[in-house]
Length: 179
Image 1: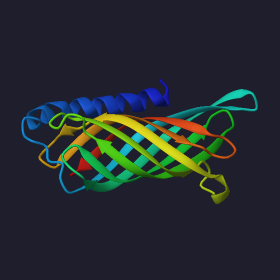
Image 2: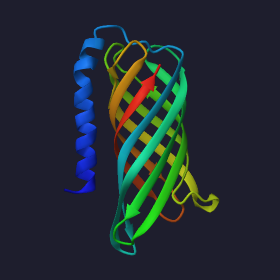
Image 3: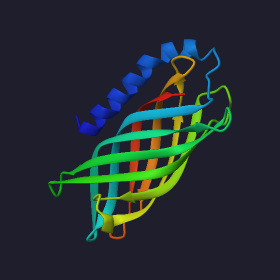
Image 4: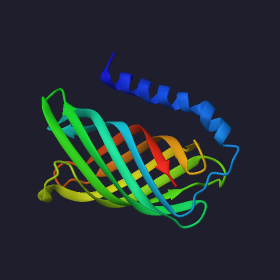
């Protein structure tokens, strides 16, 4: 079984394990007021063309975010993602990162659906000459574990417009958010 399949199964199992608790907690009103902090772990995968060949990378990604709620449905803040990828084909390690301004929107006030987006800077090899625009978009579902804590499985895209090799990373992850 591939490493990606194992990580995906772990994320799905952890999500399903939290569903009974979350279902009980969803009956109460989840607070989205004041400051928020979110941290998560994901498996990321990226493919791009390199010298007319398709080149794919995969590995763990860590994300952190913080900010403030504007109202019960919109939150703004900053987010950072660190990616570590291993290229099996080239036997090399690649590290990338981003720092973005983030908007989190909960389209239905009492439901757990959350849409995220942001713009900022990113770098594929974490060197100043490789800085470029970073854009992210994501979709998740907050499973409320209490009035101010939620567990959120999510899917996200992060595009880093590296001057030498623009790359889009796809992430499947699980985050904990404190409101």
